[in-house]
Image (cartoon, rainbow, N blue to C red; front, side, top):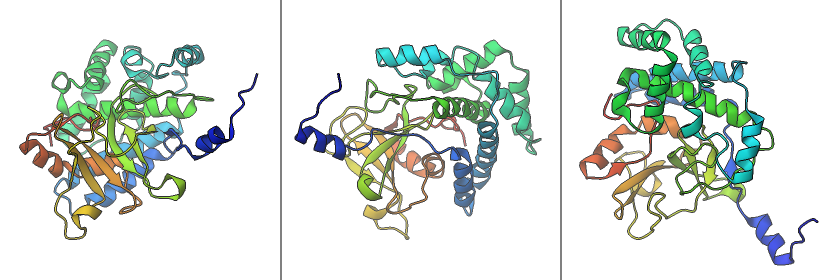
Length: 308
């Protein structure tokens, strides 16, 4: 029988914010454009442009994905029945379906000019399936020391492309909140950053952006996504003559309780801001917070920590 809602329940359902936002189908093209813009005059301009080029290849693969890595409909149904992330990274990463996306990305990636980049691409092309799997497992589990730093952006790009494609291709997707605020309901991966929206009924709402599949899920503001406390939270940003401290488009929500932080993008101050590009272009803020003793728990799969 259909569920009958009382008047108060109807109003609550109508006013409740949407739990999920899926990434746009041109996600990687948007990232590339933003990275190229942010690279102008940036001290890490070469790196940002390298990642922009990689994002353009990601978009090519997303637009024309490999046909030999289909979605397992039965898996999706089982996960739905048990309230589990349908694209659980800790499980799918140990299978080989994502490697078709790595092959497609490497095939489309142009001959790199930098010798170090060329060596990284060659290393991935000649690696065995087992070695690729071991590197990927280490990367998604945050064990960066087990992955050669030069391989991280390419391996991470392939994983992002695979998971974003699966997410966008899933029919009638139903997702439940993860076990923690910072856990993606689609794949179980940790959030990379948060976005404070600024339009219509979503104005002022915070959504976390998955580091792997780019799914966004709603989490209330002024609460640490790691220890869930609200007391003593601070919002820090880099000094910038263009913005007052409380109007900076990117700020770190710093929690004194667990000594961690998460970057937040405020779209009202930069409507075109995008999580991955904003994160990579604000590494100076990470360095400053690290000097102050705060730990970063949010991964960026296109960057090996401590490697510029």
